[in-house]
Length: 177
Image (cartoon, rainbow, N blue to C red; front, side, top):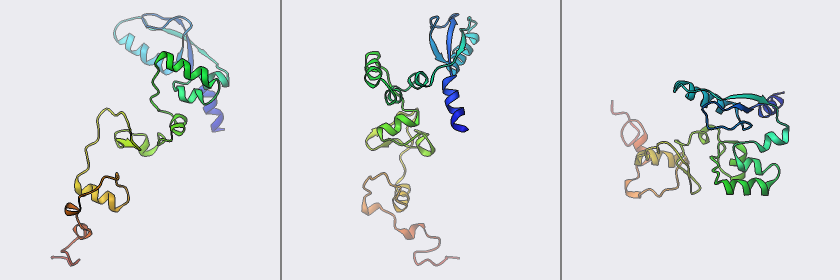
C-alpha cells in the first residue's frame, strides 16, 4: 500500500495556473504544488499578488514524464523527445532522485550519498556543494586507510602513523600510570 501512496502523490503533485498574479507563470502552466507554495510565500512577503492554481490529476504516464529530472523522464517513455527537448532548453539535471543516480551509476541520495558535503568527489565526478568539506588531516586519512575508507590518495610512508600511535599507553602497550 506504500507504493500506491507514492504513485498517487506523483499523480497529484501538479497544479495548473489559473491566475498568475505577480508571478512569472502564465495561465495554463503546470507546476509543482510545492514550488507554487514557495513562490507565493515569497510574493506575499514582498506585498505582491500570489498566483492561483487548481490541482490537476495526471495520468501515470504523464506524471512520470512531468518529473523535474529529464534523465528520469527519458528512461520511461519518449527517450529521444525528452532528451532533445532538454538539450534545446539547456536543462540541467541536479541528480536529486534515485532513478537518475542509478542511471549514471552514482551513489543514490540516501545515507552519505544524500549529503554532498560529505562526499566531494566520486569516481572522478565532482559533486556540487555549498561548501566543500575540509580535507582530512594526515592522522584522519591514516585512520580511514586502516578502516578501508580511504580516498585512494597515496599517503607518504615517512609521515604515516603506526598502529601503536592509536593504542593507549606507551609503545609496548603498557599503561604509563
